[in-house]
Length: 330
Length: 116
View 1 (cartoon, one colour):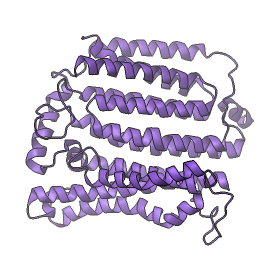
View 2 (view 1 turned 90 degrees about the vertical axis):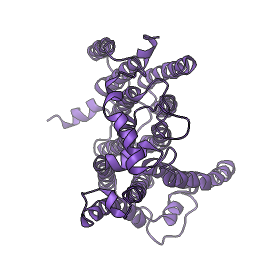
View 3 (view 1 turned 60 degrees about the vertical axis):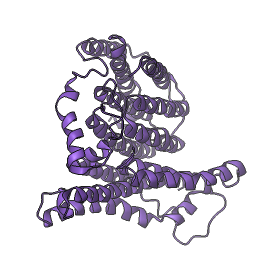
View 4 (view 1 turned 180 degrees about the vertical axis):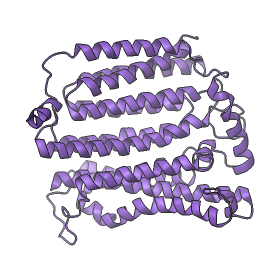
């Protein structure tokens, strides 16, 4: 990292710390949520400066986009103001300050940023980079590690996302009753339909966001991207559509049944690729047996499971949004 | 230069503890979830900082690049971000149900109602 980049990175992180303090201090939760969006964007920029393009893309789509919308949905149903406390929690402040100092003291044993002798760089990292060239032959090592070398982890993570989605639907309902099927489209509960400028501009943006989502999905082997990012971006475009045109119309575009099928289907597709490996005589999630050429097989496997991830993530995030939004309408 | 190289870790410490403070000291349940998000972001930042290699680029093998930052922390955090939004949504859903059942999202008021 050149000195200029390092200084810029430090500048971003200082802004991040100030924003974080403001988030915790403010009593207005609406302000706190807006500041969270800014903090997310600052973190995403810092990730990018730290060479983590894939992570930056995810953080920008999830943190600054979807998370803000979900918190706002929750605020609409609770209250925007936080009650002022009876007394300053001196004990908590003291403990927090002491632990922060201990952690800072511990950092003096850390190898400094970018040090080639850091343990992270020593063992697995060179192996992953070499083996990706040899065994999988796709440029994006992050995608290769995510989808192939550590495919078990990722399957677990996708199941966690799926479970969390199911949990939200259990707690809040699927929203199917709020927008009874076949009911005539009402004009009152229709998002921003009456506001001309956001509606026209937003509608112009939606196809391009969707296109970006699909590009990120299918180009994930060659450039930053993959199923997690694509799912979040596609979900963001559908959420934007619901905000502009109202819940009901969005549920006409992608009905609740389709969303549930997406949530389940993506996980099943991922698992099925794993089982296909078993059936063809390899190990679970061993893609090299999927094709006569092991490298081709790996590429097929990665493509398929990334699609599974994308479908599940998009289905879960859109379902969660609908669950929050229909709770407000009911 | 060495001192500047530790700055990322200090920000991690401050961010971690700011989030933790919101979790333990704020009675408002949504504020606690915001604190939890900040806490998670701090951990993400820490991991990504571990993976950075001086002179390296993003781990996408192409022409003209020989040194790459470590892909492994990036993979772990990439999935963790999406998991964190799902679990935060689950937390928010619980808060909504608490609000419906108790009419409040302040921890002490809820505990007062639960007291026999």
